[in-house]
Length: 216
Image 1 (spheres, rainbow, N blue to C red):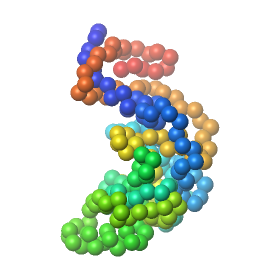
Image 2: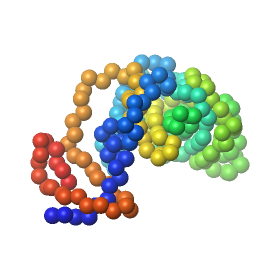
Image 3: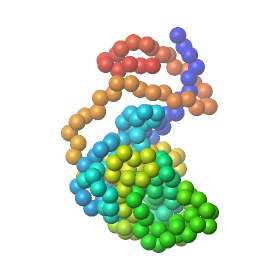
Image 4: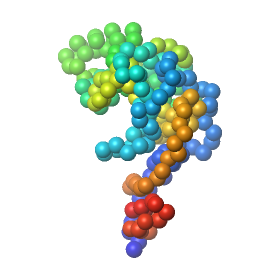
């Protein structure tokens, strides 16, 4: 039976390949956000309770307080503090068209920490968001911008790290940028989810097993 469905083609590309852009990703642009070996507690696009995981969860040996480094030159374009979700988070926009996200932080480095505290007092609330101008908080690759933690909806100390396409907002698999993470387990696709948008389209749906993948 043919049923009307709408596709978000970029999502399929994000889940399967990490980005809608087929061009090679720079493998020498981003540096590690931590000064320790990268071991993952969570991988890109793995299934969560109500969403696909949009980044990497990097282990911090069960403790908070590791220095978090800006992965490349850029500027802090968003600062967020919340008792849930990402908790303390920083968003760094880079001139190559990508943004990196650092979440569940324990605390921010100065002068961001003092700025956020002042903002909280001025707004008389704990949870705040701020979108700095490009020249307010410039950063260079390797600058300490925060310290890893367990804030927000986190069940243990780690760093949640993302790479996003600035133009589309879509998350991109950070491992496409050649971060030094050892991974010898190939992915297995059990189901594929198709999202709807407003552009129109049709797809033939099957409710059967095909090569171990259920097509819905």
